[in-house]
Length: 412
Image (cartoon, rainbow, N blue to C red):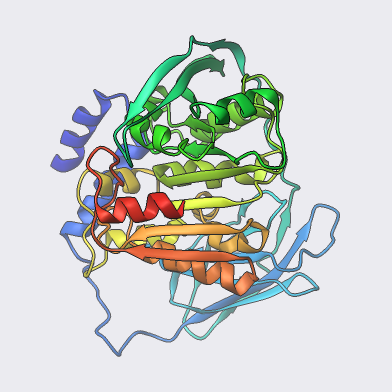
């Protein structure tokens, strides 16, 4: 209670939602005080199961839909529906769970809480999923600033043209968007319009304001690529839905030709994200009007349930304040649908060819996230490549590059 009182006082002063406060306090208590009852190794009780159907709102079965339950510590148990929409979820330890179902093109839905008992099957856990309908975004008051010269010393001294832009969405002014144009012939070709030999445009969702990554964006224009850089707006805080809407709004402006001199995206563009930016990208990806021809995932999250598991791992230690930021998002046993929507491993079959990059020294987002993504893409038959490197920590720093930074840059 003392911890709760202190946390409430401190975090409330920072304008954080009460639910986030509770999530963090509960997480800290679970980390500090182990459960009163712990099943010794080798004596875990017999498991139970759930079964039911997953259909759309008119009663048609949704083959391949995922039915899932999760423990408070992120241990997820899932099964896919057959051609008749039927599923059976086995191997679930006894306990109380909120089941959910999800499928590409449908709204992820939580069901009513169920009690699973050893050796028993909970039947009739059925779902009727509504079709996914993206809430429209209507960016207003677009302001495109004057061109500026931006420079980078990595991978060699170079410059690019940087153009800032801002807009308003849902009454919030979204600042920090940047357009980077390559120097010389690349910029001329870009402004003249797309052509078969034009280098792809990279739209990057950074984990913080794009100007923090200025050197990296400039560097990525070296070979004629343009860069459209966005990132989370501080006014949104931990409002993940809001961050996703901001990203969709920026993409919509580009898609509608309102970010000159960039041409609207055609077949020559790539989506790129990393770290916290991957949560924004994957949350919004199913709602984009077009899918990217390819993606780059650098140090990202592919399985949000696995991310919660990392909070309690004996082998891993996510340092503060990153652990509290993850815990603040919620509990997967109470709201598994929220975490499912940030877990592209479950809909890998619908992803474009993807280049996955991660460092094995990552203390914030463990590299097992990259391995899980590669495994899911391989199972789905999606072209991909996994690059693991070892000589940096979580963030790639273009201001203090290492051999790993140079390797990743060249491969991207």
